[in-house]
Image (cartoon, rainbow, N blue to C red; front, side, top):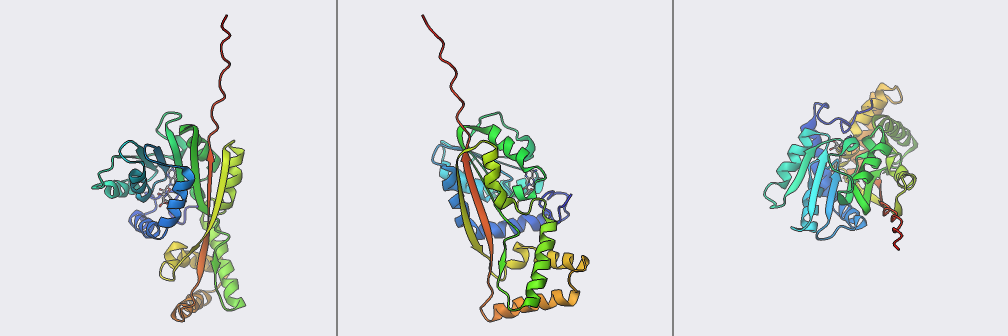
Length: 280
Ligand SMILES: C[S@@+](CC[C@H](N)C(=O)[O-])C[C@H]1O[C@@H](n2cnc3c(N)ncnc32)[C@H](O)[C@@H]1O
């Protein structure tokens, strides 16, 4: 199984702490994008919400403030390290958040439990995204709202000066695609929601700028350059030269990179009403 980024099996990756830190860094940078997702989920005071693959828990804490004391927030994640971090994040917020270690493929909730179910940057790490979505739909109440968000790792942008660097970059992107289980997830979400029978599907697409200091970690630059070297597509010297060129651009104030994030929401169709009994 592909799991080079570690996110398909955080606890088995030998770098769970590093991945928890990485999520906290991104959570900081992605606060605006997360809020857009909450609007698509139509959460409000009193809503019950589930965050699937909640990671270090930032969204759960934010959602608990949105839904207030009459609402309910739950988060699940396959990783014990992530759930431990989410519990730390929830401590002291005064919000009761139900956090559990569980798989998206077997959500530990009865059918039709939640008004809203979200899943951010998780489908890209799933072998069977359709089965994951089916579980999310099962625990949403009829009429409830579902939202998933992911990038398409084939669409990352990076400003470069010459053809040689574009060739190295392309090799490193191919390596990134090989490292991720479902790398084009972002552009697959809308069709997946439609095939699953969801209604009122809405998609928003956002370009997310990535700063120079965040870039290596956010998009696994050292790992993907090393993988391209191992694949024989570039030499170690070319990899080093590429990093030096990015550093030079940053010194000029001309570093520019972005990821394209897809947000897709849809509603579980309301159950058809049964036939009214004929009285008389
Ligand atoms: C990139 S992180 C995103 C975390 C969080 N949603 C966020 O936006 O910060 C992916 C998360 O999905 C979790 N995950 C991966 N496979 C999973 C599965 N089968 N069931 C539940 N969680 C899973 C990982 O443990 C990790 O915390």
